[in-house]
Length: 329
Image (cartoon, rainbow, N blue to C red; front, side, top):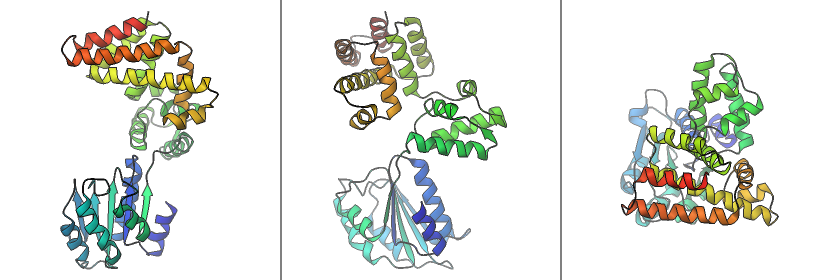
């Protein structure tokens, strides 16, 4: 962010920018800041072009960059979700890569993408001649600081344990956290947010619901597990999706258990299986309720259940319910 702030402050901009990654909130924040700095209010019609969608024609993008700004210092060309940075659009990507070095000083080209291939010619060209920012979901520690700051701006107080509980309850990502924080603000007004407020107001993520259900299965609390399952069905969640998430949870527990027994620390396990550290910690807690052979059998049963549902041998809701009942008693 400092690089962008310096560019804006000094009015010295790169010819091309690329914002990519999983965190949409950061991509939007960076885009909005640059857009506001580059195009004056009311001047968008004549000085801003947006190309959105897969594989736009390179000629139209380049023609837009070649158009001189009207009563404005810069012309901004935004290309969103183009997939030009991944395999499958080599011809169009190479045309743009060949043009990047010759973008007029009066034009700025901005790409906003989910995924990029850093080995590709277009990415390498942009990184060498412009500025690339990977917008990752922040670490839990960074998210805690950010949530506390946003809560304070709304006149709210959130103690660290409540912030952690909040972040571990809602969907991953800054956009989801901000939306749920807005709901808490409307509910509480001003003052301190408590865990019960989070439970009362915030929409628990599917991941959290599945985690709680598998915990109930492991603790042999069949009624609790079935209650969670039936509530998800009432919320129109797909039984097939629930089954896939149950299998995923069993797999993470098995991986965590295996690596912990091999002597790996939680942080190392998290990196190896691409999970957040607190997820590994919670899974290791759940792992105490399962033997490795039971987890392997559960994964096999989930696979067979999925096949039976898709071939019409069993009704989807009943099939998942039978998995829950088998391992919850």
